[in-house]
Length: 310
Image (cartoon, rainbow, N blue to C red):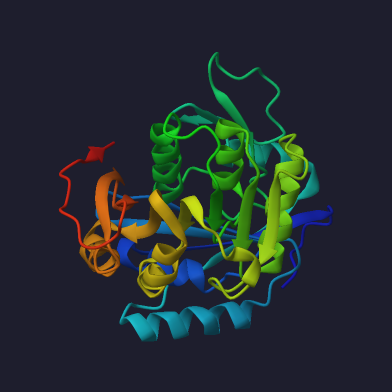
């Protein structure tokens, strides 16, 4: 696809609207294909807009075929797409409009285009919106950040794994809060490179170690860990229940996200069977983040009734 604007192009955006329950499936279809995928609620009737960013001129036919396959598999209508080119001259302002600075708990999140100082007592996270697989705005990512904020006083030097690290925002937040090395793993090499680069931008040097791995397939992820951050999707979280539980140290926490409120029971059942108990949940709109604890000695545990809704 090419446009009539003669100015140099910084990238292309493909937008389409889907029901809220379809957001994970349609977003996941572009993993490893697009340079960034974001989603935002646009109406009160549970309709969301997905925006897919490509640095290279996208293949419109391939996009339409991918959307048709996802729609057929989930029983949803095929979304209509809008595609636009973003000239280089407009890129900085367009990025600023799409990604202004914002706060989640103690974290102040912004792109490099933001020059103003961070608010007092905040932890600054610099994440480039153009290349991020998760900038903190989405309900699942912000829920994880709130969970990390709440856990910040629990350990002095926890062993942390950011599983499905994407942009690395969660691992970077953990590395800054606890000042410890963090392992960031993803099955997409582009995501791992992005996470490592974002760690460098945040002044963490080699504090975030990037590993390409599908689940725990890489032996370097053996653990044990005091904290596992997994902002993925509901079904992969269920499949990973046993290996995540096995690699958690006694008293460790798993922060699970990427699931809708209606999918909480499915995920919780899988982890309770592995001896983890619900400590709290964080709800951000339709999205839920679950904080689970591995009790000393393992085994089945009683559910704690604790909930944070924001």
